[in-house]
Length: 380
Image 1 (spheres, rainbow, N blue to C red):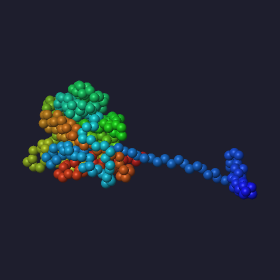
Image 2 (tube, rainbow, N blue to C red; image 1 turned 90 degrees about the horizontal axis):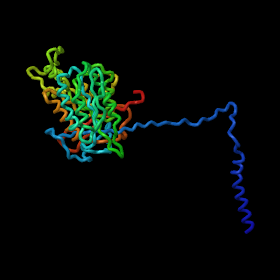
Image 3 (spheres, rainbow, N blue to C red; image 1 turned 180 degrees about the horizontal axis):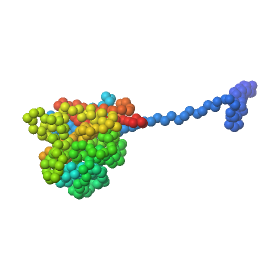
Image 4 (cartoon, rainbow, N blue to C red; image 1 turned 90 degrees about the vertical axis):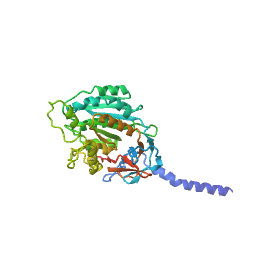
C-alpha cells in the first residue's frame, strides 16, 4: 500500500512539472520589441451601423359608395414593404392623439378669401385636432412665421386663425412646409410603452411656390421618414380675383388653384368635379417617388397634390364660397376614421425607395395608404 501511494505522488508531481515550467519561463514584464520585427496590432473595432425605422401608416378604407369602413380587424390587413410582408406592431382605428401643424398662406394673393380662412379656426380645432390633440400654426408669404406653438387649447387656435393678417405677395410654401415637418418631428412617436402621436400637416394655400430655398423632394423625404401625413386644401385664386377690388391687376388663372390647368374638352365647363377627373390621367404616386428620389431637382407644378400623394394624405381643391370649411371638415372626418398600422421593416432592403402596399381581405373596398418612404445613405 505504501508503494502505491508513493507512486501516485510521483505521477502528480510529474504532471505538474510542465505547467510549473511554463510559468517559470513567462517574462516578468512587457515583451521588448526586437529590431526588425513587426509587432502585431490589435484588430480595429468594427462599428456596425443599424438603421431602425418605425413606419406609421394611416390607412383609409372606403366601400364602393365612398363611405368609410370601420369594422375591419387586424388580421384582415396585409402590409408589405418592398414586397416583404411585415408584422403589424400597432393597430388602432382613429383613436391615437394627433399633433397637427397648420400651414396657411397669408400673402396678398389670397386677401379676398382671408375672411373665410379666418373662420376655419373652430373647424380646425374641433374637427381636425380633436379633444386629445394639439396644434400649431405657421403663416407664410415672403416670410415664414411661427404664429402659434403647439397647444391643446382650442381657443388659442381659434384666436390665432381669427387674427391672420395679410402679408406681402410672396409665397414660400415649401419653406413653410419644411418648418412644419421639422416641428412635427419632435413630437412623441409610438413605442412599446407610449402610443405616441400621429403627425399631420394641413396646408391651406394657393398652388405654387415663390421664393423658397427648400426643395419639395427634400421636404417630402423628411416627411416620409418622420411619419408625417400631409393634407392640402387648394385656395382658389380665381374666386379671390373675382372678389377682389378692381385695382387688382393680375389676370385670373384659367383654373382654380390647387387644380390642374390643362384645357377642357371643347364645350365643357371647367368645374372642380371635371378637374378632379383629370387627376386620373396623371400618376401622382410616380411623381412623388421621383421627387423624393431626386431631392435636388425642382418640382414646379402640382406640388400640393404630390405632397398629399407621397404621404398618404389627400388634396382637396376649393371653388364655392363655403368649400374651405367643407374641405377641412372632410379632412377631420377622414383622419379620425382611419386605421393606424405601425411596423418596423424587416428583410425589406436597405437604402433607397421602399414601396409600401396595404391590402384588405374583403372585396369591393378601396384602400389608400402612404406609397412608401426613402432611406438615404450616409452621403445622400
